[in-house]
Each structure stands twice: as C-alpha cells, then as structure tokens.
Length: 86
Image (cartoon, rainbow, N blue to C red; front, side, top):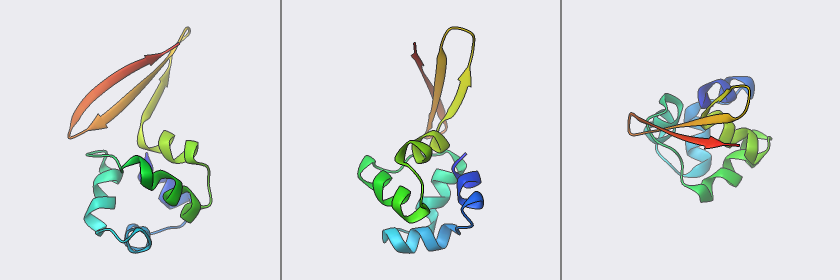
C-alpha cells in the first residue's frame, strides 16, 4: 500500500502534499486506496520519495500472483476493478 511506501521512506503525508502543492486529504485518500493520483504526478512522487515510478504505481495497487498470471486489483472510489496481466 502507498501508506507503507511513505513509512519506508520516512515521509509524512503532509510533507508530500506540501511538495506537490496538494491538500493532505488528497494524499490521505491515496493512502486509504480511495482514489489514485493523476498520472502526471507519479514522476513527481517518485522523485520526492527517491524511488522508481514503478514502485509508486505498485504501492497504489494490490498485486496478487497466481500460477499463470498476475491480477492487478485497482481500487478507485471504494470499488475494486481487476485487470489480468498474462
């Protein structure tokens, strides 16, 4: 989860929000999995956290692997949407 990434990087929601010129409540929604940041913010988030864009994106989705494929569970507005990646 995104909140776990912030913890690992020792970054507070309010500090990230301030750097991105967003409200803390926006970042809080990402941490709760209620919505996702816009794609143009992903590189900025990655740069601020000192990690890859892939790490940011994967922290925003649940990745569940089974034997033959991966299922990416995207959470948006409290509804779960699944996409299978072979």
